[in-house]
Image 1 (cartoon, rainbow, N blue to C red):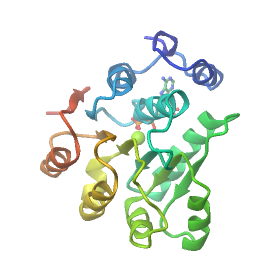
Image 2: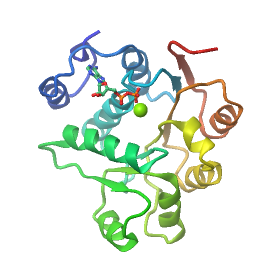
Image 3: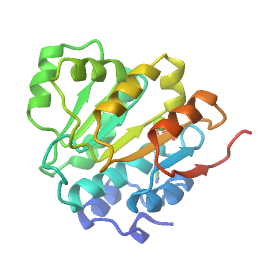
Image 4: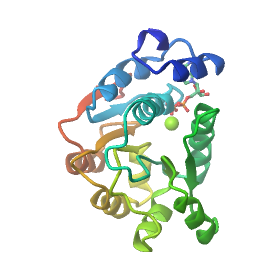
Length: 214
Ligand code: ADP
Ligand code: MG
C-alpha cells in the first residue's frame, strides 16, 4: 500500500513523498486507516517498523483537515519514555510541519522549566514530551489539556518499566475524555501493566499486533 492510496491531505502526501516515504510499512497500513476513523488503537510491532509515522500521519491529518473542536491547544500530545526518543520524534514531526503554520514543541526533563512555559504559552498544536516533565507542567498549570483531541503513548511498555504509571494516569485524568482519541504503541502487548493501562485509557480499542512474540 502506498501513502497515496490513503485518504490524506495533498500537502501531507507531498511532504511524505519529498521525505522519500512512498510505501507504507505493515504497521502503518494497519494502523493509519483505523486511526483516521477515530478508533482508539493498541498496537505492537518490532523496533524499526515505522511506528512513529503510524501515529504522526493521522495526527497531522486531523490537525490540518479538521477544525479544532474547542479552539484550545494543544490538540495532540505525544508521550515517549526518554529524552532521546522525544528528540527523534520531535525531529520527525518538524520535518512534517515544514511550510505549515502549525506549531509543535518539545517538552522534556533536564531543560529549563520557564523556557518551556514560554513555548507552551504560544499555543502549540502538538506537544512531544516525556511524562515526568509534562506532569510537572500540569501541576504548575503552565499547561492545560482541556482541548486535547489525540493522546499518543509511544513505547508504553518502556514508560511503565521506567515507573511513569502515575504520571500517565495523571495526564489522562487532566485531558478531556469525551473528544479524545488515544493511540497506544508498545513493543509487546504481553505485558500486564500495559493491559491495565489500556483498560483505563482506551475506548473499545482496535488491537493490532504485527510479528508479535507471543
Ligand atoms: P519504530 O518506532 O517502529 O521503531 P520508526 O518510526 O523509528 O520505527 O522508524 C524506523 C525507521 O524507518 C526511521 O528511519 C523511519 O524514517 C523509517 N521509516 C518509517 N516509515 C517508513 C516508510 N513508510 N518508508 C520508508 N522508511 C520508513
Ligand atoms: Mg518508535
